[in-house]
Length: 327
Image (cartoon, rainbow, N blue to C red; front, top):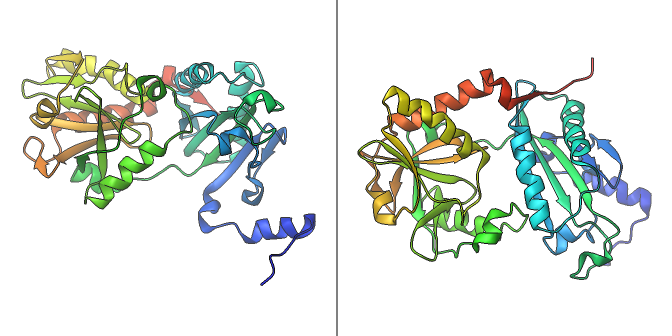
């Protein structure tokens, strides 16, 4: 069978025919190449010569859209700009303009709940390695249905394994780039081994992070513990949880908060373990390498943190940015 060659009209028709069922949950996209927002999923595409596509020279971040508000938008945007600087990608617009585009795209989606992810790319221009060939950096925003996790993650808990996938070097772990192959592999490895997720261990044998989530523990003497941030991504959600943990110390649910090295043995001996991230929120870990954590059931501190998260998205006005939907 001869491979077809399409003209512009035929190619557009083929794009519409090739949209998959999941694209029904792609609500709006901004592209600096278009210079505006589109709501037709068939047109939510990137040029193949964009260096983010074929070289991974791009960074991204995600904010949660909840009840018509963007939760922690400014904190996520601050990390996004920090990643862009580390990746040596210049901004196509001032930071305030990027922020407004994100809000405008959320408004154009008409959705009051979902995820708003945005990318900064070195841009299109060819298939070389150097971004010198790029015509300029590109900015993209997508509003889509938020990734969902089974309710059982919160009621029965999560099972993890110690991953054999090498962790990213500290510099690359701190840049939220589109180079997520290690993250993908750690999750695939976990699924193959009958678990829900995996835990990266650093080159010193210390607990680092999960696939795309931070890892935290509660010791048997009720100390809230988190690994050092030098070799892992500084999660916006876990940073907020560390602040909220101060309230749990004051009420006596926790004795103190510690950020430092955690060995695998210390982690497995903890009373509680949890995964923390903007998509999963706070999920208790009940089994690690087929051994129970604590009593093998979701613990009370993980539940308290999840409740605090839900309260935060309703009442923390300093963490919420209102989306101005069209009338």
